[in-house]
Length: 68
Image (tube, rainbow, N blue to C red; front, side):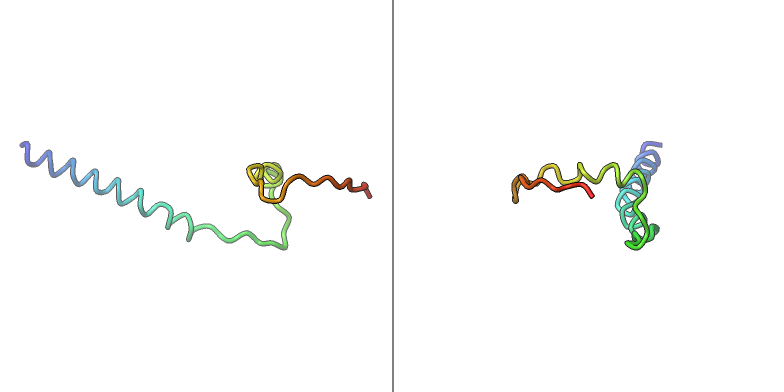
């Protein structure tokens, strides 16, 4: 009984690890690439200004841009 249970647990863990390793590949191949000719969805435009908040390579922009 103990050996059968060990085999069952080991196969369950192996299946779980295999699913975890296969998941990124499945997600990468199942989604279509973003079409740059279409406008961004609302959640992407909301995230846009905050995506690069950690960049410190250029520095702040002190120029004032007039509104059109």
